[in-house]
Image 1: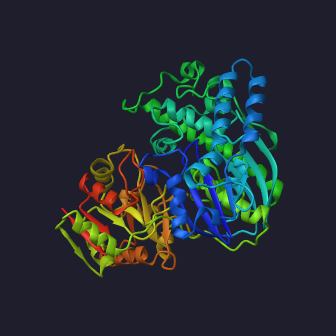
Image 2: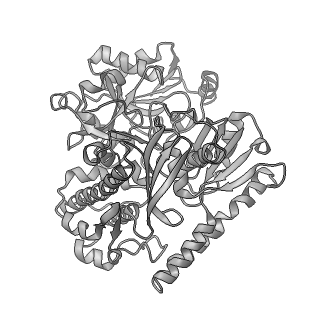
Image 3: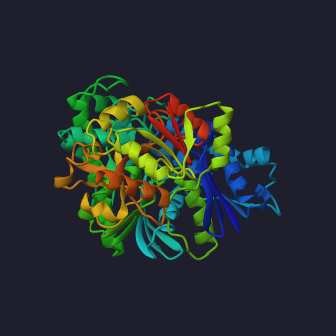
Length: 565
């Protein structure tokens, strides 16, 4: 049985194809169009999935879409009435989104000559937060768990509490739009001069440089209530009254916090302190919800998804602050992951097929064989390259010598995290490496931290970590006596967003780390995504070569080929 899940028209369009409950292929449309956070219909991602499976779209049994247009229309009408007249522009915007969502069937017919009728795939709409919940619960190692989804907004809800068991999860309660932790965070992201629904991770990275001096004001804005819910003081925001790109914070917010920062302006102490206060307020609000969920369900295992689930600083503190013992964060927790969740929801929840998959990697994208890479190098008439069987050992020596290496291997990762397939690698023990990679390779802000990829069996020697962390979904403290040994991956607050690497899951990448450890004594490398700021992660060898020659990378490793300048 084939199930295709798709999401589009809002942001981070993607497609996922399951065969008998196993993930055959998954990719974001941005990797093919080269437009970051692409929102158009994912025609290229769908074609990639079908090509990988060797099937035509009429052979798919079910097609699922990540949003329920009927609920969107219902929300738009109720929002207009409840908040009239201020809510009317937003409600009209929801009407336009309703129109877009109904285009998906038409586009399937146009792009793939598919008639959605008898004898063809069944088409189903899946509620947004149920797609998020399915994406995390059905891929977790837990048969039973508390489940929560927190993002900007779904059709009606901005956060939903669930209890999951086997093939089903029960909705317990929700927080409804316009009260939204995700949109509150996005609004302040815009206020601080960054892009909302895109750069929230920058605000998270900026927060440790400040002090939470505005926390009392943020506690007035995010008001926790009994029974685990919260409300937003909407007088500080305009996101609920308009779909305009400028409609985020209100004049009252500016009066309280000062003038907004423009993109490119210097980051002042006030900006850093606002970021620190916002991050603390987010954590307090989320932990308030999670403590209620822990008590209500009696579960000590948690599954988390939704855009707020990408806040790895918050994730790393959940167990210490909420009573949960184990946490699984689906690594593609933002909207791209709803393509995966939609397919899983249909296969497990609606069709009651047994669960058999625990997510261990995200390598579901395109891959390129050595033969095709060699042909490309010859076609480009490049001369500075060699083929080697000892690719891990040679790459480790480059890194040990302080070189910065582009690493392109196997199937591309699904999601925003580079986990050893499309990565830029460097020496974590060279203090200047952080600034060097930020300035000369990534072309991004100097305050941005870098993550380590560490041998799974050695992680406990360097980090305050229990268990595994294969997806960079949480931060943890670097042990005090190790911080000077790995300064390039130690953030200003002593934390690091860690990826543990196992020999079973990624043997070549594990071998590289092992070879690097033999040379340096350090069982990890600095790992960042293979792209420059503002561009998606590279997908093809051509894109990797272009990035190599346009940045300060010293070497490029493509399969078993090594390129130099």
